Length: 372
Image (cartoon, rainbow, N blue to C red; front, side, top):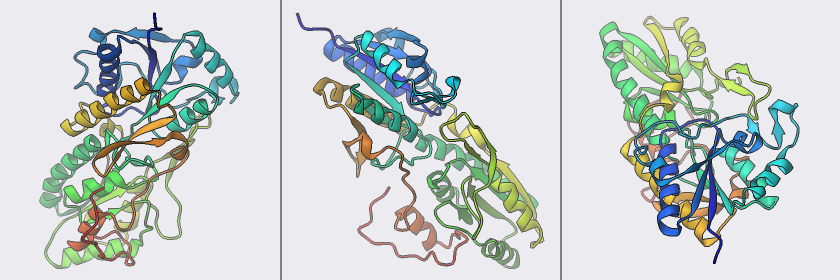
């Protein structure tokens, strides 16, 4: 008799809407197609370090499609190659030994760039790993979309819709600070969808004078309010990112935040209108996933299961111009996908007069450009 397929599933890094949909798709696909044993690894790679696992039966993943968060838990500090609880020690050999002792044929690792980087290293050391890209930031190299992003954009867009009415009522400048780390995808897409007058993103330094000019022009033309969307990693020309704090035991110790307040202080010295800042924070990553994210997560999960079946390890599932494909894990590790100048969404914003606080950005949309 052939050995029964045994597959581990983990969710690493920050949470995002759609994680449970992937867990569901991976588990049900493997059970229905191969009568596989699926093992849930708790709290990301920390579950492998601390030996915390549990079986996932078909019924365990029924009814979780619409749930936000992850039933397995997650952790954004548990790097086996630099374990925070042991002073940054490399415990990867222990993790590999434990995983092999469980008889796992493969691990499906669902997460962002940090998770994919760890997965690539484990693959190099002999573990069979398949990656599924997750982040609300949409900044993973090799895929044009990650699940969780659409939900985050929808949440920010709804907030902008609500702030429009209060901004107009009080003739105020409203600043909305979004997540996104070192990439501006959330701010860009939500800013365009929400009709923002100014969008500031990390990819292009902004001049405070340009933002002031937009606000003053709107005041002089009788438009009594201005909506500004600023990504947490946005930088004023010649300056750095606004760091809220540093977490020394984290793989990415920098915690961005507060750029909206900094921008508010700068504007208040130069314009008549009152300025208010709303920092949306973690509300962007919570709650039930949108229909798009549920579908994308389900497709990613079922495709990851197929990669395990085929023995196609060391790969990450990806979306490329509407096609589901794969890219090598090592090509994703330690890289960030940022907004390019030829992004059709960015170019559409420029075409309708949205300011990015940078006079060097001009409308150059190519008719052949594809949505990203």
